[in-house]
Length: 464
Image (cartoon, rainbow, N blue to C red; front, side, top):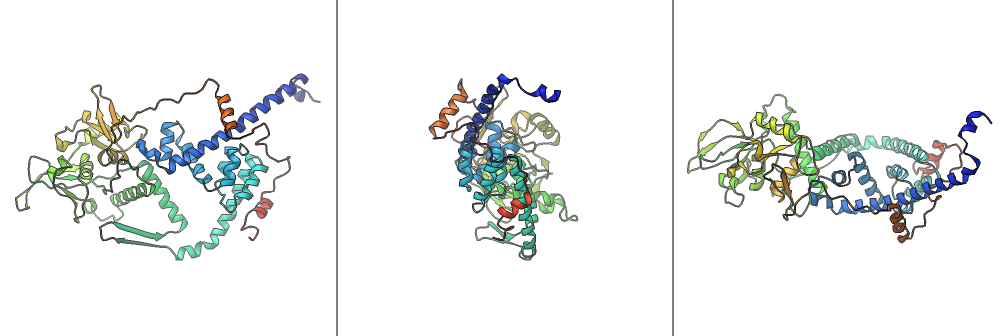
């Protein structure tokens, strides 16, 4: 025995004690994995029922980041794995019994399907987390090779149909090649999650009185408002993101020779309707399609504005110069002060200036009457019933549509004095018998031949 080995070996009497310590670590880890499985079950249900929308969050991952303190990347992965486990009952049950670690489950859910999960579950039980990762990487390579043989057929079938319904809504139907679809998905994800908007906006308000500013500009496609008690679905969020992509593409010169004014979306709103959504008056797109007065108020919050005066027969008799609702210098100050959306739990860096008391109701365009909100939460405040006000101390206070306060930081959950004891008791109540060997892999140290394993396991590789 060399000196190095002698120095690292424990004293003879300590071996049993260290074995007990190792068993405690392994057993507690199994309890934690079982608890994590239950956590993902709860996340999947919460996500499916849209519970995150009740707090004004933009997605379940954003809610987890805010409410639980997860990093956004970790939150998205938790939601992805939770959704995948809903279609993989065998892997989900093994995870719930503490037999698989979260690391293994996270890897398996990248490739497992209801048809292949039983084979992959065997991989998870037999190997280490590193083995599982290597098998999953090889599995994905086989998938990619098979998909390459199908690419020519997919290319020939690409198509996009755009047509208008009788009620004015525009329908899209089509098929895109995988790489093109991925670009679109990524762009929609970026738009949905950040709603990063660089474009100028244009919006027109018609009025019969010169006392009320009568035209506002905003390059923003108005969407359909969501009822206050129904959070926007993923499909509705996708529609909002697609509108943002279209606006941004046009603004940044998809047709380089066209002036920006060509792509401005014009909305006509009577001054009384702008000042009070309950008041009678029109709120129409340039092509005659109706949008709600509250949508018009949201667009007019932060836009450029032209005062127009109409004669009684509707003719425009005077048009003033266009001015910004929020002047550039004030906008810079607003960005510097708020540093992004002020809605609790959001924090998106770019957004729109919101008049706490609307300028059409006499609210001043001053820093104290402005707050930065992202597109999603600007819509929530105007069309979905959320409320915002500034208290005498200058702090913003948000309320849900039912009037309940929306706390910036939820109260911390009460943690018992002995959380490990509680965890063991909860797992025992669920009928789980967990011990130090529950999650131990069956691997005995032999070499892992990934190619052979894929040939045996993958349906495409073995000709099934």
